[in-house]
Length: 382
Image (cartoon, rainbow, N blue to C red; front, side, top):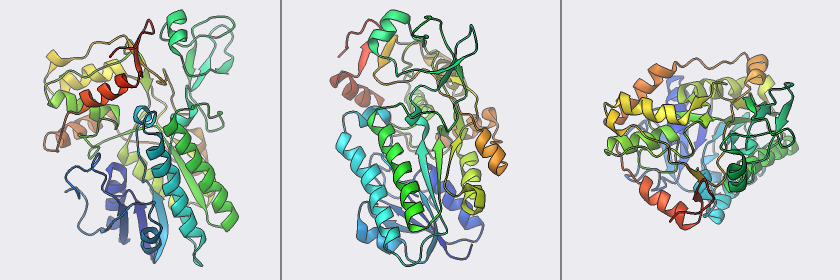
């Protein structure tokens, strides 16, 4: 790769690791990032390499995007507003940042005589909503809608078959599963995929979309209460507060290390078979949110702050969704390799010196003010 790489949102968690990777390979890196105060309250982060050419601008700024595309061969589009819950009451912001920003980037690419050799778009598993489920009695695979408060009042926290009322077992979710989520964040990430793939085919530049499951690792903001659950829990514990675990703590997520994400991006940038494809990027391992909260409390030496389940429900939260990663394994030969325990130790070591601010209480207050947190009985708490 002779020309430079452009990483939108490259001052962030995933983008900065990608920048390090490409720089180490001898490829010049340009970053376009607005340094959103919610993510970067102190401005340019200290971990962002001095060798990065940083262009501080919004991806929605067409003139800035045009300038950023000069002499660029590969684009990795990371820039996005992140947060399912916040997207439900900041609708215009999420649409503007995620869909508008992607539109501005695609407009700029289409207008150029020289097109990139690859556009990689980081999207999200949130589009699936609830993942794939299996009915225990006969093994039939089912898709089910996102739970409502009424569903939980009637059947409890777990998903049930609407016909037999059996409690369902989660199964790995493939890329072919219908995108059922209707929250604003999930819809914006879905539109990013559809727009990028459609325009790439129309104008003749190859696009690959990676559906991120729950990415974790060093550099994830410990001051942004809408970021990943591991960072949110750590920021609480480091502030001497117990993490808040909703429901009964039995809901699960599929966590993938940022280092495995970097490996995947590096692979799809140049692999011919990745062009025009959507790939899940997860491990296929379901980890309980309650267990993670307790494990982190032990790791930081604050067993006294081990969380207990609140018995409350956040509107739109899913119970289970784990990745079926067979497509990327069979197509590109990719499998994640990061060790969970070692990765948690790395995250904890980084967090001890990282800027942190426990703003979870303010974020939860906003959710309650909008009626998005309720007791199992359906009563909104404020």
